[in-house]
Image 1 (tube, rainbow over the protein chains, first blue to last red):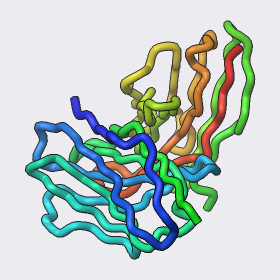
Image 2: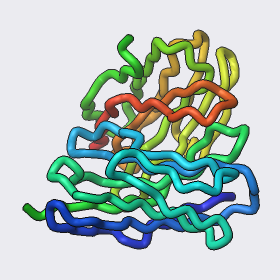
Image 3: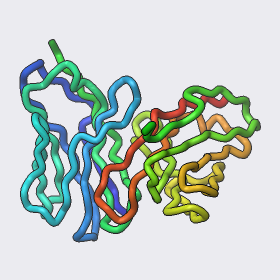
Image 4: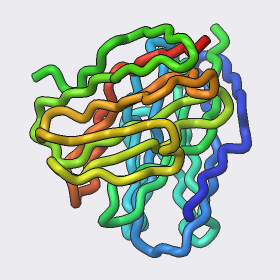
Length: 114
Length: 113
């Protein structure tokens, strides 16, 4: 079975600075997808960014980018120019190719310091 | 287009009571699933369905029942509520066979006393 590990229960960053959230995963599969979800206090789960494992290029979405290291099974999220609205729980998630089941990490709570 | 809707948003049950959490989506998604979220444990898959009439167990299925009679609806039934089922429950849906995102409902906070 696949596992996803987020080793940072809490992180904080000054507004406008850059922060990196860590995620590692364990799988024997070669084709899969990785996701970062944001959960603000409203509780709504919001997709931040996704990465297909067969793509070598790291995904980017505006201020959000990932560092995908397939051999190391690492998938970190970098948030640039942090904003107060970025404060939330962030979950890393894994999904096998051809299977819609998501496996989540335990989450990292990100605090933005004004 | 309402996306994924869940009712109720909050519920308090006594131990032993039964209830159904409702989930509906209007995006014609084949795949629907239920997760529970507990502090320090992320989201864990309870049950899922790949289409009407087809359901299967996820990681933590005990104490829960599901059925899928239509593409739109995927209710989750608690047969005899226990305090260990106190949690936040999320329903999600997506198109099957693609790398599309899963769309989550707003969640139901359930407390069992």
